[in-house]
Image 1: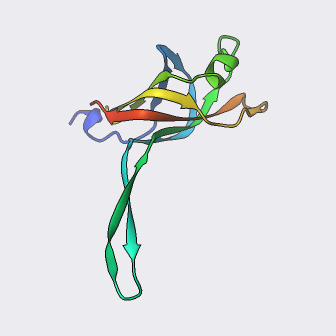
Image 2 (image 1 turned 120 degrees about the horizontal axis):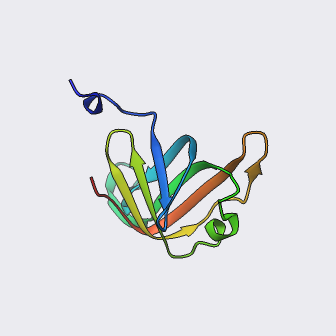
Image 3 (image 1 turned 120 degrees about the vertical axis):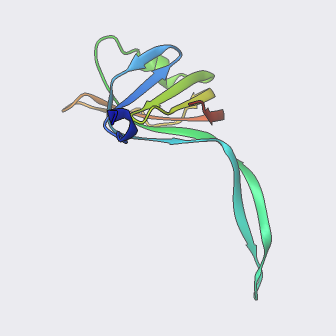
Length: 123
């Protein structure tokens, strides 16, 4: 059977505004949409309310001489694409950087975090 039917992890690609970066460790991606919260009374749940939850991407990228750190942390209307090992891709549009500006020197990792106004699974 083809390997892609069973592969679930071990590969991740992060592309910001057309530039692909080397990723390290685990990334998290959240698709934007409504978040439901229960409305509870003293004896039962009365229903729920919804509020918008923006898309989100968090993780770490590997620093090198070609990475424009300032450009990444100044991002206010970017496009971020996550490509996963299982073939799925998440598209985050109108993304803005929300993370700390931490650079870890031992392994050259940059903490990455952004939220987006619109995101979806595209494949």
